[in-house]
Every structure is written in C-alpha cells, then in structure tokens.
Length: 420
Image (cartoon, rainbow, N blue to C red; front, top):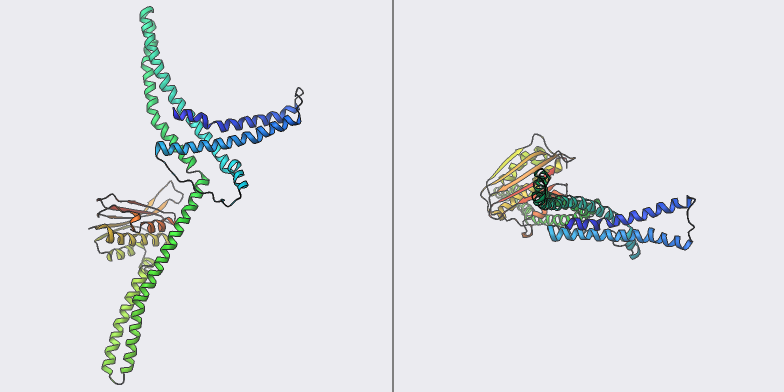
C-alpha cells in the first residue's frame, strides 16, 4: 500500500515534464494550422515561462524530494543508510550551485530515478492490490451470491460463486506471497538507483581513494621510521663497533699478532651479525625468495618465522603477477604477526589458490586465506593492522574480508586480481 501510494507521487515529475513537452508540441504545430487563434506576445511569454521554466523547475525539485523520501524510507524501514558523498565542485559560486542543483545532471538523473521507482511501485503495488483486494472481495461477494442462489436460484447457478470462493482466496494468497519478493525488488531497485548510480559511485570511489591514500601515506611514513630506527639502533651501531674492532686489530698487528688475530675473528663475527640484521630489515620489504621463486616458496619461509605452528597449502600451477605476489605475501606476513600478537591461537593455516570468477571481466583471482583457532573478535579499531591490510589489498582493486566471531577464531580472506 505504501509503495503504491508513493509511486503515484514518484511519477509526478515525469508527468509535469510530459505536460511541458506537450505544450511545446502544440506551440510548434499550432501556428501552422489554419484555424489557429491569434496569440498575444504577453500570453506567449507567460506560457513559455510556465511550461519551459516553472514546470521543469517543479519537476526537478519534486524529483529530488522523491529521492529524499526513498532514502529516508530505506533508512527507516530497511535500515539501509549511506552517507551522501560531498559535491566535488563545492567551490563554485552560489548562482552556479543553484543552477546545477535545479537543472544540473544530478537533478535530471533524479527525475529518471523517481520515474523508474514510480513505475515499479505502481506495477508491484497494483499487482498485489488486484490479487489481494479483488481476490478477497470476490470471495466475500461469492459467499453472498451462494446464499442468494440457495434462497432463490437453481442449483446450476451455484457453480460460478463456488469457483470464486475457491479462486479468490488463492489469488489473495498468491498476492501475499508475492509481497516479500516485490518489496525485495523495490529495495534492490532503490539501492541501485540511489547508491549505485554512476555519478554516486564515482564520487564514493574518489572519497574512498582519498581516505585510502591518506592511510597508506601514514603507513609508509611509519614503515620508513621503523626502517630508520632498525638501521640506527641495529646495523649502524654494529658497523661502528666493527670499525672500532678493525681499528684496534690494525694497531696490534705488529706489537701483538695473536691479539690482532683474535680481534679480526671478532670482527668477522660482528660482520655476520650485521648481515643478519640487514637481512631482517630487508625481509620486511621484499624477500629475495619471493622474487626468485614465487609465492609458493616465500610463504613457507614466512610461516617458519611465526611463533605458532603454521600449515601452508599453496595450489598455484603458475605464478601470478609480481604485484599480486607482493600483496599476498605482505598480507600473509601481517596476518601471521596479528595472530602471534592478538589471537592466542594454537594452529594457523595459510592457503593460496587461483580462483576463476566468470562474472568478472578479469576472471582470475589469487585467493589468500589465513585461518586460526584463536580467540576471534578481530576489531580494526583495536590497532590490529586490518586497516593497513585492507588498504594494501584495495590498492590493487582486491577485496579483503574478515570473519572473526568471538571465541571461534578468525578467517581472513584476500581476493587479489591475478594480473594486478
């Protein structure tokens, strides 16, 4: 009932524009007819203002109101809420913004949206009303008809009312059963028109890219500071100690050769420690094994460094793009770090496979899944690094999903385009 009533309002903007177009048609063809009446200039100007200015203005504003009602209804009835994206041309002057608000592309798009929603509501509401109301009314009327036939008619006249008594409730039942499906299609249509329209999707994507870019800049800055700290506190200090040891060994070469040999041996040990320190720093950037041998060889190495038992299951007949491998490796390493820090898990499984999705233009995906049996309840706001993972995957148009019910472990899945 609500959809049917609102559908009539949704169709008003289109009807107003039809009236305006009809006047234009008459205005163009009427002067060519021999019986055309003479029109004054003032009357013609008034008609032009009414039908070419006022009517489109009213249609545009009513369409915006209709779309606003649709959004409010999606929020109040179905709990579907989406923040309206800001206008990317917000720096325009008031006059330009007012013109765009009334006669811009968004305004005419809303006329189309409201018309589509109105036609759907009129069709769906009309079908349900006809089936339920007419079916119920036919059944009730047939009961009175049966009583009338039994009182004054012949037995042969009772077949029609009996048919309506059976068919009417069936039609009402079919209408009631169709209601849920029609409401679902209405919600889907409104979501597609209001939330998935091309201009809305582009603006949302711009906002999304802006937020993601800011987070990635912060993450890159934090990573740079980590590398600087590791080099300063680790490798740099060890290199300084190595330089001093070699200096001491050089000063003892002639006076105490044995002591110099001991110092050179100590310098060799320190140089190996420096190399290990630099390998630890470089491993966090891009490991050599990943470049040379691919994800199937790099994931077991990352799993071997984890403090919990990790099972690695890689089913890749060929290597994906280097970018996809790098993102998958980063996600696996960060996920294993999160498990070690927060999950309290006893077992972890890391799997990688190639998945074909025929509905997408880029059909193949590299799917990385990290599963643990820990405490679950992973929360991005708790500093678990999920935002960083999400930004890294999203940067290549991938999708990261986390299923982490409290007390039931966590399943992290990253779907990365194979040719990212």
